Each structure stands twice: as C-alpha cells, then as structure tokens.
Length: 81
Image 1 (cartoon, rainbow, N blue to C red):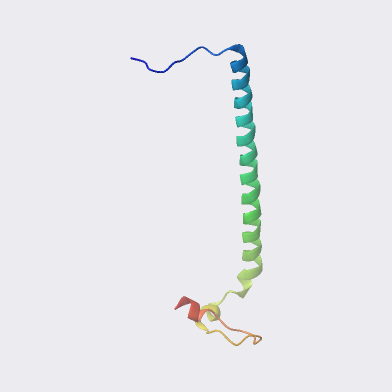
Image 2 (image 1 turned 30 degrees about the horizontal axis):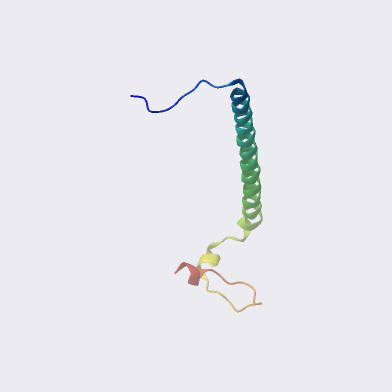
C-alpha cells in the first residue's frame, strides 16, 4: 500500500521546480569555479616554495642542529629526531 500522497505538479509548481533546478546548477557551477580558483592559488604557492626553496635543501639541513637566533646556518636535526 502506498502511503505517500503524491499529486501531479501544478503549473506554478513546475515553474518553481525549474527555478530551483536552475539555481542548483548555477550554485554547483559557482562552487566548482571557486574550488578551481582555490586549487590554483594553493598550487601556485606550493610551486613558489619549491622553486625558491629547492636550492637551500642539502644534507646539512637535516643533520645539523639548530643555532642561536641571528646566527647563520642551522638545521632541523632536533625536529626530526
């Protein structure tokens, strides 16, 4: 037995349904564009960090300990161990 009370859509309901459907498509498109823009921004920052920071990476960065503030050099040994 079907307990739902389904009626055929009235003309005004059809217009409302089309409006909701169009709004849904628009908002999904807008959120997709926003996601693409955010992804491009994140990858551009990542690319910038890789390009500018790749020359600074060497074995000494991972094997030397930290130095006092203001002194040149230093490494990440304590953070890794």
